Image (cartoon, rainbow, N blue to C red):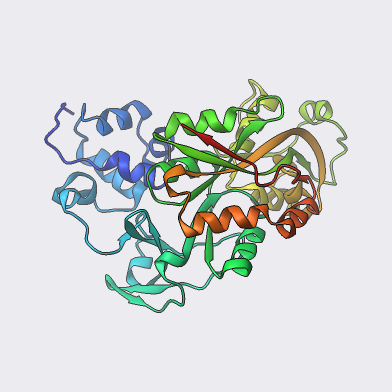
Amino acid sequence: MLASESLPNRLKQLRQERGWSQADLAQEAGISRPAVSSIENHRLIPSVAAAMSLARALRCPVEELFGQAADRAESGPVWAWPAEPTELEAGRYWHAKVGKRTLLYPVEMTPSGVLEHDGICRGGALESRSRFSAEQTLVVACCDPAAGLLASEIERLTGLRVIILPRSSQQAITLLGAGLVHVAGIHFATTESPDENRKAVRERIDGSFSLLRVARWQEGLALSRNVAVHSISEALAAKLRWVGRQAGSGARNCQDELLENRPAPKNLAKDHRGVGEAIRSGWAEAGICVRLASEEAGLRFISIREEIYELCFATEFEDDPRIRALKNAIRAKSYSKLLADLPGYDSAECGELQRVG
């Protein structure tokens, strides 16, 4: 492979739109992370095999990554990220106005269950059938298992629709930085290191942003009731089957600190509830998640640390009616009381706002 800057290249853009790191893409495509970096920065032209592997991992045509299609200007609604190939034949989608673009999102499972879709993509043509306009829709990427409560509160108070996309903290920040969601939920900060959320966003997003406090929650070790373990030290000494969390999540940070230099679990859960379900169903005996997910699954829980969960948005959009609705809902006493009733949630600071930059 030779260096060149003449080959059109959307690899970085499409990777970020999926909320992946270079290491994530490298693993999915079966190539090295340095190779991904070099291709993104036009230092290497991928071989045919590498280009096909990258396109397969990103579920898009090779031409969209490295061909003329990358240079064509989009008009009208555009996909936030590639839909699954089968969904392009007759796939459901949601729509939302983010900045100056109307984006289409392939329908996926949300914390609120199955949401009403806005239309169908059939044979490349869009068939709209929505009760909600793109301007009435707020898109939030987060891993909060209680995010459905916030969506319900906003809709109850304002009539606006909220779509919650389950994503890790790092994935959420990446999507926000790429202008693909309105709000990102993050929980890297802890009581001992309260500035980590701000640092994480500053590393990945240029410009001013705001952090809206939702809660402090307990992150810890969920355990099967069938194992005779009653402390962290006993859990580390026992030969338990672990379910891990993906890189870039707050739970993964907690997991890495707990396991230190031990190999990370090979089997990974996508979110907090995934950890609880893996243990409840017998696929694993231990894993890191928030207390709420552990108790929902009927597991035992040992708290490890208290984390600060916040929602991040670009300060320039603070006057957007949907962001105003978000702030008002979080500051409503009714929502704070709902959170306070959840296992492991402390809503005393709910609604506090920090502007950065």
